[in-house]
Amino acid sequence: MSNKPIRVLAIDDDKLILKLIKTILSNHNFVVETVFDPLDAYSSALVFEPDIITIDLMMPELSGWELCDIFRRDPKFKKVPIVILTAKDDKQEREVAKYLFKVNDYIIKPFDAEELVKRLNFALMRRDSLEKQEKDFFETIQIIGSLAEELKIKNESLERQIKLREETIINIMKSLTIALDTKDPYTKGHSERVADYSEIIGKELGLSSNELFRLKRGAILHDIGKLIIDISYISKPGPLTTEEFQIMMSHPSVGARILEPLDFLDEEIFIVERHHESWDGTGYPKGLKDDEIGLLPSIVTVADVFDALTSDRSYRKAWPREEAVNEIKRLKGIKFNPVVVDVFLRVF
View 1 (cartoon, rainbow, N blue to C red):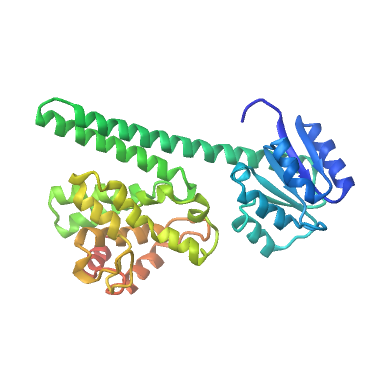
View 2: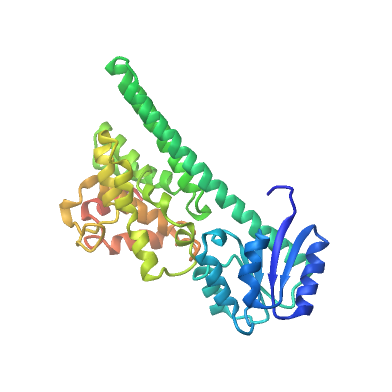
Protein backbone atom coordinates (compact mmCIF):
# COMPACT_ATOMS: atom_id res chain seq x y z
CA MET A 1 0.00 0.00 0.00
CA SER A 2 1.13 3.60 -0.59
CA ASN A 3 2.02 6.02 2.18
CA LYS A 4 -0.91 8.35 1.48
CA PRO A 5 -3.66 8.40 4.16
CA ILE A 6 -6.25 5.64 3.83
CA ARG A 7 -9.79 6.95 3.36
CA VAL A 8 -12.50 5.05 5.27
CA LEU A 9 -16.22 5.60 4.68
CA ALA A 10 -18.08 4.44 7.81
CA ILE A 11 -21.87 3.93 7.46
CA ASP A 12 -23.99 3.32 10.57
CA ASP A 13 -27.28 4.60 12.00
CA ASP A 14 -25.71 4.79 15.49
CA LYS A 15 -23.89 8.09 15.97
CA LEU A 16 -21.98 6.77 19.00
CA ILE A 17 -20.59 3.89 16.92
CA LEU A 18 -19.60 6.32 14.16
CA LYS A 19 -17.84 8.53 16.69
CA LEU A 20 -16.02 5.52 18.13
CA ILE A 21 -14.91 4.31 14.68
CA LYS A 22 -13.68 7.77 13.75
CA THR A 23 -11.74 8.13 17.01
CA ILE A 24 -10.09 4.71 16.71
CA LEU A 25 -9.14 5.02 13.06
CA SER A 26 -8.05 8.64 13.24
CA ASN A 27 -5.52 7.63 15.90
CA HIS A 28 -4.05 5.22 13.36
CA ASN A 29 -3.69 7.77 10.55
CA PHE A 30 -6.89 6.86 8.68
CA VAL A 31 -9.02 9.63 7.20
CA VAL A 32 -12.62 8.86 8.18
CA GLU A 33 -15.87 10.11 6.66
CA THR A 34 -18.99 9.07 8.61
CA VAL A 35 -22.50 8.65 7.21
CA PHE A 36 -25.48 8.46 9.58
CA ASP A 37 -28.26 8.26 6.98
CA PRO A 38 -27.78 5.26 4.64
CA LEU A 39 -29.65 7.12 1.91
CA ASP A 40 -26.70 9.53 1.77
CA ALA A 41 -24.07 6.78 1.64
CA TYR A 42 -23.71 6.36 -2.14
CA SER A 43 -23.52 10.10 -2.89
CA SER A 44 -21.00 10.54 -0.07
CA ALA A 45 -18.88 7.74 -1.51
CA LEU A 46 -18.84 9.38 -4.93
CA VAL A 47 -17.45 12.58 -3.43
CA PHE A 48 -15.15 11.03 -0.78
CA GLU A 49 -13.75 8.22 -3.00
CA PRO A 50 -13.00 5.83 -0.11
CA ASP A 51 -10.26 3.19 -0.10
CA ILE A 52 -12.42 0.97 2.13
CA ILE A 53 -16.04 1.02 3.35
CA THR A 54 -17.56 -0.19 6.64
CA ILE A 55 -21.31 -0.86 6.71
CA ASP A 56 -23.78 -1.69 9.47
CA LEU A 57 -26.45 -4.23 8.45
CA MET A 58 -29.55 -3.19 10.43
CA MET A 59 -30.40 0.36 9.32
CA PRO A 60 -33.70 2.12 8.51
CA GLU A 61 -34.72 3.02 4.96
CA LEU A 62 -31.82 1.10 3.41
CA SER A 63 -30.24 -2.06 4.84
CA GLY A 64 -26.55 -2.90 4.76
CA TRP A 65 -27.23 -5.62 2.16
CA GLU A 66 -28.96 -3.14 -0.12
CA LEU A 67 -26.01 -0.77 0.20
CA CYS A 68 -23.57 -3.58 -0.61
CA ASP A 69 -25.58 -4.33 -3.73
CA ILE A 70 -25.54 -0.67 -4.79
CA PHE A 71 -21.78 -0.39 -4.36
CA ARG A 72 -20.96 -3.69 -6.07
CA ARG A 73 -23.05 -2.77 -9.12
CA ASP A 74 -20.97 0.36 -9.69
CA PRO A 75 -17.60 -0.32 -11.43
CA LYS A 76 -16.03 2.52 -9.38
CA PHE A 77 -16.60 0.55 -6.15
CA LYS A 78 -16.38 -3.02 -7.44
CA LYS A 79 -12.87 -3.53 -6.03
CA VAL A 80 -13.21 -1.32 -2.94
CA PRO A 81 -13.06 -3.59 0.15
CA ILE A 82 -16.32 -3.69 2.14
CA VAL A 83 -16.27 -4.67 5.82
CA ILE A 84 -19.53 -5.42 7.65
CA LEU A 85 -19.72 -4.13 11.25
CA THR A 86 -22.80 -5.62 12.93
CA ALA A 87 -24.13 -6.90 16.22
CA LYS A 88 -25.77 -9.82 14.41
CA ASP A 89 -23.58 -12.93 14.51
CA ASP A 90 -25.18 -15.18 11.90
CA LYS A 91 -23.12 -17.83 10.09
CA GLN A 92 -25.48 -17.98 7.12
CA GLU A 93 -25.36 -14.22 6.69
CA ARG A 94 -21.56 -14.35 6.77
CA GLU A 95 -21.67 -16.71 3.78
CA VAL A 96 -24.15 -14.46 1.96
CA ALA A 97 -21.94 -11.47 2.66
CA LYS A 98 -18.82 -13.13 1.31
CA TYR A 99 -20.13 -14.82 -1.82
CA LEU A 100 -23.18 -12.87 -2.93
CA PHE A 101 -21.93 -9.36 -2.19
CA LYS A 102 -18.17 -10.13 -2.18
CA VAL A 103 -17.80 -8.62 1.29
CA ASN A 104 -14.17 -8.75 2.46
CA ASP A 105 -14.75 -9.17 6.22
CA TYR A 106 -17.55 -9.49 8.78
CA ILE A 107 -16.82 -8.03 12.24
CA ILE A 108 -19.12 -8.45 15.23
CA LYS A 109 -19.91 -5.56 17.60
CA PRO A 110 -18.66 -4.75 20.12
CA PHE A 111 -15.24 -4.86 18.46
CA ASP A 112 -11.75 -4.42 19.82
CA ALA A 113 -10.01 -1.25 18.57
CA GLU A 114 -6.74 -2.96 17.64
CA GLU A 115 -8.58 -5.81 15.97
CA LEU A 116 -10.61 -3.38 13.87
CA VAL A 117 -7.48 -1.62 12.64
CA LYS A 118 -5.73 -4.91 11.95
CA ARG A 119 -8.59 -6.34 9.91
CA LEU A 120 -9.13 -3.20 7.85
CA ASN A 121 -5.42 -3.17 7.01
CA PHE A 122 -5.57 -6.86 6.07
CA ALA A 123 -8.54 -6.27 3.74
CA LEU A 124 -6.56 -3.51 1.99
CA MET A 125 -3.44 -5.67 1.74
CA ARG A 126 -5.50 -8.50 0.24
CA ARG A 127 -6.98 -6.12 -2.36
CA ASP A 128 -3.53 -4.82 -3.31
CA SER A 129 -2.18 -8.35 -3.60
CA LEU A 130 -4.95 -9.43 -5.97
CA GLU A 131 -4.54 -6.28 -8.06
CA LYS A 132 -0.82 -7.00 -8.39
CA GLN A 133 -1.52 -10.57 -9.49
CA GLU A 134 -3.94 -9.30 -12.13
CA LYS A 135 -1.42 -6.71 -13.33
CA ASP A 136 1.36 -9.31 -13.50
CA PHE A 137 -0.87 -11.66 -15.48
CA PHE A 138 -1.75 -9.10 -18.14
CA GLU A 139 1.89 -8.03 -18.37
CA THR A 140 2.75 -11.70 -19.01
CA ILE A 141 0.13 -11.87 -21.76
CA GLN A 142 1.62 -8.73 -23.36
CA ILE A 143 5.07 -10.28 -23.25
CA ILE A 144 3.71 -13.41 -24.89
CA GLY A 145 2.13 -11.31 -27.64
CA SER A 146 5.40 -9.48 -28.23
CA LEU A 147 7.33 -12.74 -28.41
CA ALA A 148 4.85 -14.21 -30.86
CA GLU A 149 5.15 -11.14 -33.07
CA GLU A 150 8.93 -11.36 -32.90
CA LEU A 151 8.78 -14.91 -34.17
CA LYS A 152 6.73 -13.83 -37.19
CA ILE A 153 9.18 -11.19 -38.34
CA LYS A 154 12.43 -13.01 -37.64
CA ASN A 155 14.23 -13.53 -40.94
CA GLU A 156 16.44 -16.38 -39.83
CA SER A 157 16.94 -19.95 -40.86
CA LEU A 158 14.09 -22.41 -40.32
CA GLU A 159 16.13 -24.31 -37.76
CA ARG A 160 16.79 -21.14 -35.74
CA GLN A 161 13.11 -20.16 -35.92
CA ILE A 162 11.96 -23.55 -34.66
CA LYS A 163 14.47 -23.49 -31.81
CA LEU A 164 13.49 -19.96 -30.80
CA ARG A 165 9.81 -20.88 -30.97
CA GLU A 166 10.26 -23.90 -28.69
CA GLU A 167 12.31 -21.89 -26.17
CA THR A 168 9.67 -19.18 -26.16
CA ILE A 169 6.86 -21.66 -25.52
CA ILE A 170 8.76 -23.18 -22.60
CA ASN A 171 9.12 -19.71 -21.07
CA ILE A 172 5.44 -18.99 -21.73
CA MET A 173 4.40 -22.21 -19.99
CA LYS A 174 6.49 -21.36 -16.93
CA SER A 175 5.04 -17.84 -16.76
CA LEU A 176 1.46 -19.03 -17.10
CA THR A 177 1.92 -21.80 -14.52
CA ILE A 178 3.29 -19.29 -12.01
CA ALA A 179 0.42 -16.90 -12.76
CA LEU A 180 -2.14 -19.69 -12.25
CA ASP A 181 -0.53 -20.87 -8.99
CA THR A 182 -0.64 -17.37 -7.49
CA LYS A 183 -4.42 -17.12 -7.94
CA ASP A 184 -5.04 -19.49 -5.04
CA PRO A 185 -2.52 -20.76 -2.46
CA TYR A 186 -4.50 -24.01 -2.12
CA THR A 187 -3.65 -25.02 -5.71
CA LYS A 188 -0.01 -23.95 -5.69
CA GLY A 189 2.12 -26.58 -7.39
CA HIS A 190 -0.94 -28.50 -8.60
CA SER A 191 -0.04 -28.42 -12.31
CA GLU A 192 3.54 -29.56 -11.71
CA ARG A 193 2.36 -32.46 -9.54
CA VAL A 194 -0.23 -33.52 -12.10
CA ALA A 195 2.53 -33.45 -14.75
CA ASP A 196 4.79 -35.64 -12.58
CA TYR A 197 2.02 -38.15 -11.83
CA SER A 198 1.06 -38.27 -15.50
CA GLU A 199 4.66 -38.95 -16.51
CA ILE A 200 4.89 -41.85 -14.04
CA ILE A 201 1.71 -43.41 -15.46
CA GLY A 202 2.85 -42.77 -19.05
CA LYS A 203 6.20 -44.46 -18.49
CA GLU A 204 4.48 -47.52 -17.02
CA LEU A 205 2.24 -47.61 -20.09
CA GLY A 206 5.33 -47.66 -22.31
CA LEU A 207 4.76 -44.33 -24.07
CA SER A 208 7.50 -43.05 -26.39
CA SER A 209 9.77 -40.18 -25.33
CA ASN A 210 7.87 -37.81 -27.64
CA GLU A 211 4.50 -38.89 -26.19
CA LEU A 212 5.83 -38.45 -22.66
CA PHE A 213 7.08 -34.97 -23.54
CA ARG A 214 3.70 -33.94 -24.93
CA LEU A 215 1.86 -35.60 -22.03
CA LYS A 216 3.87 -33.72 -19.42
CA ARG A 217 3.57 -30.41 -21.25
CA GLY A 218 -0.20 -30.84 -21.67
CA ALA A 219 -0.53 -31.72 -17.97
CA ILE A 220 1.31 -28.55 -16.97
CA LEU A 221 -1.12 -26.54 -19.10
CA HIS A 222 -4.31 -28.48 -18.29
CA ASP A 223 -5.86 -25.76 -16.10
CA ILE A 224 -4.69 -22.75 -18.12
CA GLY A 225 -8.30 -21.74 -18.77
CA LYS A 226 -8.71 -20.95 -15.06
CA LEU A 227 -6.49 -17.91 -15.50
CA ILE A 228 -9.56 -15.88 -16.45
CA ILE A 229 -11.82 -17.37 -13.75
CA ASP A 230 -12.68 -15.13 -10.77
CA ILE A 231 -10.51 -16.27 -7.82
CA SER A 232 -13.55 -16.25 -5.50
CA TYR A 233 -14.91 -19.25 -7.48
CA ILE A 234 -11.62 -21.17 -7.39
CA SER A 235 -11.00 -20.70 -3.67
CA LYS A 236 -14.63 -20.76 -2.48
CA PRO A 237 -14.84 -22.70 0.84
CA GLY A 238 -18.07 -24.48 0.00
CA PRO A 239 -20.24 -25.74 -2.87
CA LEU A 240 -20.53 -23.56 -5.99
CA THR A 241 -23.86 -22.20 -7.16
CA THR A 242 -25.21 -23.47 -10.49
CA GLU A 243 -24.00 -20.30 -12.22
CA GLU A 244 -20.54 -20.49 -10.63
CA PHE A 245 -20.18 -24.16 -11.58
CA GLN A 246 -21.11 -23.39 -15.19
CA ILE A 247 -18.37 -20.75 -15.27
CA MET A 248 -15.84 -23.19 -13.78
CA MET A 249 -16.89 -25.85 -16.32
CA SER A 250 -15.89 -23.51 -19.15
CA HIS A 251 -12.18 -23.61 -18.31
CA PRO A 252 -11.24 -26.63 -20.52
CA SER A 253 -12.78 -24.96 -23.60
CA VAL A 254 -11.30 -21.59 -22.70
CA GLY A 255 -7.88 -23.17 -22.22
CA ALA A 256 -8.07 -24.85 -25.64
CA ARG A 257 -8.94 -21.52 -27.26
CA ILE A 258 -5.99 -19.83 -25.54
CA LEU A 259 -3.60 -22.44 -26.98
CA GLU A 260 -5.28 -22.78 -30.39
CA PRO A 261 -2.90 -20.33 -32.17
CA LEU A 262 0.04 -22.56 -31.13
CA ASP A 263 -0.65 -25.18 -33.83
CA PHE A 264 2.29 -27.41 -32.87
CA LEU A 265 0.60 -28.04 -29.48
CA ASP A 266 -2.17 -30.18 -31.02
CA GLU A 267 -1.86 -33.07 -28.54
CA GLU A 268 -1.49 -30.68 -25.62
CA ILE A 269 -4.66 -28.84 -26.70
CA PHE A 270 -6.57 -32.15 -26.67
CA ILE A 271 -5.36 -32.74 -23.10
CA VAL A 272 -6.43 -29.26 -21.97
CA GLU A 273 -9.85 -29.55 -23.63
CA ARG A 274 -10.62 -33.14 -22.59
CA HIS A 275 -9.21 -33.59 -19.08
CA HIS A 276 -12.71 -33.32 -17.56
CA GLU A 277 -14.33 -35.82 -19.94
CA SER A 278 -15.52 -39.10 -18.34
CA TRP A 279 -15.22 -42.66 -19.61
CA ASP A 280 -19.02 -43.10 -19.37
CA GLY A 281 -19.74 -39.92 -21.36
CA THR A 282 -20.99 -37.78 -18.45
CA GLY A 283 -18.03 -35.38 -18.47
CA TYR A 284 -17.57 -31.98 -20.11
CA PRO A 285 -17.31 -29.96 -22.29
CA LYS A 286 -18.27 -32.36 -25.13
CA GLY A 287 -19.54 -35.46 -23.34
CA LEU A 288 -17.01 -37.72 -25.08
CA LYS A 289 -16.80 -41.35 -23.95
CA ASP A 290 -14.52 -44.38 -24.03
CA ASP A 291 -11.68 -44.18 -26.56
CA GLU A 292 -13.10 -40.98 -28.08
CA ILE A 293 -11.34 -39.11 -25.26
CA GLY A 294 -7.84 -40.27 -26.14
CA LEU A 295 -5.15 -41.89 -24.02
CA LEU A 296 -3.13 -38.82 -23.02
CA PRO A 297 -6.15 -36.81 -21.74
CA SER A 298 -7.34 -39.93 -19.87
CA ILE A 299 -3.99 -40.17 -18.08
CA VAL A 300 -4.13 -36.52 -17.02
CA THR A 301 -7.72 -36.96 -15.78
CA VAL A 302 -6.62 -39.63 -13.29
CA ALA A 303 -3.53 -37.65 -12.21
CA ASP A 304 -5.61 -34.47 -11.82
CA VAL A 305 -8.25 -36.08 -9.60
CA PHE A 306 -5.64 -37.91 -7.51
CA ASP A 307 -3.75 -34.69 -6.78
CA ALA A 308 -6.97 -32.78 -6.05
CA LEU A 309 -8.10 -35.42 -3.56
CA THR A 310 -4.73 -35.60 -1.78
CA SER A 311 -4.31 -31.81 -1.50
CA ASP A 312 -5.90 -29.34 0.94
CA ARG A 313 -8.60 -27.19 -0.58
CA SER A 314 -10.36 -24.09 0.79
CA TYR A 315 -13.53 -26.19 1.27
CA ARG A 316 -11.98 -29.41 2.72
CA LYS A 317 -8.85 -31.10 4.04
CA ALA A 318 -6.77 -33.47 1.91
CA TRP A 319 -7.89 -37.09 1.75
CA PRO A 320 -5.51 -39.78 3.05
CA ARG A 321 -3.57 -41.31 0.15
CA GLU A 322 -5.19 -44.74 0.62
CA GLU A 323 -8.71 -43.29 0.45
CA ALA A 324 -7.85 -41.33 -2.69
CA VAL A 325 -6.46 -44.47 -4.38
CA ASN A 326 -9.64 -46.38 -3.44
CA GLU A 327 -11.77 -43.60 -4.94
CA ILE A 328 -9.86 -43.81 -8.23
CA LYS A 329 -10.38 -47.59 -8.17
CA ARG A 330 -14.11 -47.18 -7.45
CA LEU A 331 -14.55 -44.91 -10.47
CA LYS A 332 -12.72 -47.25 -12.88
CA GLY A 333 -14.81 -47.60 -16.03
CA ILE A 334 -17.14 -44.82 -14.85
CA LYS A 335 -15.08 -41.66 -14.78
CA PHE A 336 -11.71 -43.14 -15.67
CA ASN A 337 -10.21 -45.21 -18.49
CA PRO A 338 -9.92 -48.77 -17.03
CA VAL A 339 -6.47 -49.34 -18.59
CA VAL A 340 -5.12 -46.13 -17.07
CA VAL A 341 -6.57 -47.00 -13.65
CA ASP A 342 -4.95 -50.46 -13.73
CA VAL A 343 -1.57 -48.87 -14.43
CA PHE A 344 -2.17 -46.19 -11.80
CA LEU A 345 -2.90 -48.84 -9.17
CA ARG A 346 0.39 -50.60 -10.01
CA VAL A 347 2.56 -47.51 -9.55
CA PHE A 348 0.65 -45.71 -6.76
